[in-house]
Image (cartoon, rainbow, N blue to C red; front, side, top):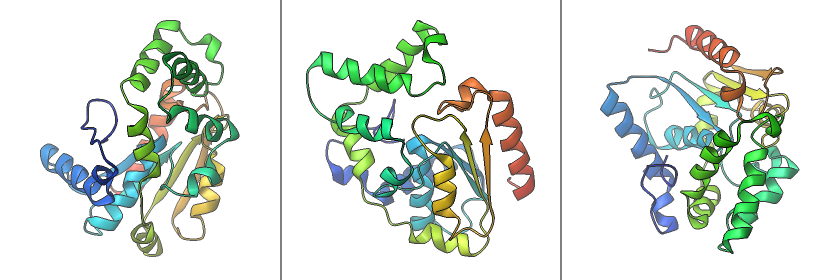
Length: 224
């Protein structure tokens, strides 16, 4: 995902245009020889489904899974985000002192888990390192970029399948609120909340239940 990890990080907001995310996704499909897969987007990664729906053919995807995911940018961030993450976002997007960044970064990492004190320090440092690899301005560009969900809503009207898969104890994204926001558009939507290990990092705390539900969804929609 551009702006994150080892992906390219454009230095201007123009480099975070919706069509560019869709182009990136099309290149991934081409590189791996994939046709009509299920898209699974964790956290901010969920927004890419809206880019795909807007700029690529309607039959590009077999379905979408929002894995504790944000459907698209804009006011939706504040409608589905918890008070903890909403208050942290400005601090994570400002160019301030190293000590301020580390403090905000550690708070952010703690919101990923149900009980952060039970997570190994080395593991938390690895997650913090990923946060540190992204300059604040890249984070701001990723969250504030413009998206139009009309293409996604058009697919929804046609019965496009959506699974809202979240943690019951997520400290960042309220998946039940995601489902409420999407319900008026999606005729074919399921909400499934993970209780055990149901944090924002649900794939880390309860990978078995997550994978079982995703496989069940893929079998139902006939993903190729």
